[in-house]
Image (cartoon, rainbow, N blue to C red; front, side, top):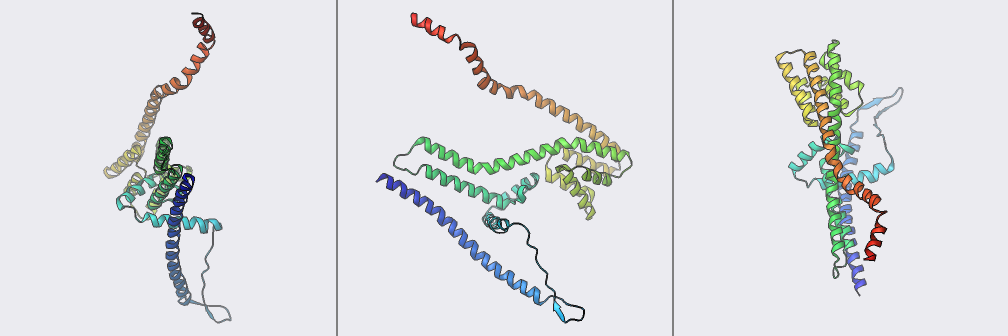
Length: 325
């Protein structure tokens, strides 16, 4: 009887998940069908209202612009369908959270071209998946096992927190990479300025020389300046996108030097020297923290092995000594 009850509860849990996914699929299908009708009507209207062209010796005919189909069938169907579901679920995210998360995704370099709504939708789906797994593990409500209950809670927490931990790791790695590459970039800027190149030309030189995140951001600055955005605004946009302290200070000093009319070569030389000194201090700080970080692995892994090697041969003699007493 209890086995039947457990199987019924399992079927109920699976049924709830299937119903949830089925309703989502039906809603998405209806919305897609309505949108597809609009797309077809717009496509027909473009065909009817297209400007006619005259072929040599032939009648006038409307011009048809063909669409290029790129990507595999899986990407154009399953992946696209999954992205649409994520966008639909992301609409229910509060606006303030969306703004903060968009900024964090920008700092991380927009991994997988993900938006804030899609990220929150993935987090929600991971949370639901964790709840389903925890429910399956603890389907016997009459005989609750505290160990399995704790495992279920841990699974739910891990599924809920993993997307945020993954994103924070991406942000930290990208910021560290940009911070490590900034002194070398300033050295090259200083050399270019000393050689007689203007600041804009120096930025363009670096963006074409380095295929790194910092090089891509500098290339974006040059593109914005080519579009008519002022140099100060483009640099400030880069500082806001990356949120790196050293880069923010450098941008502030460059903007201030531009306002007062200082020489870029002198400013870049002093900034490059300062960044190299800060990188040395940062490396020393990391080295000074290593002994404290090595204490726990030594105490937990190395000391027990040393004690086993040292005291192991004497254990039989000690046991014989106590057995004779």
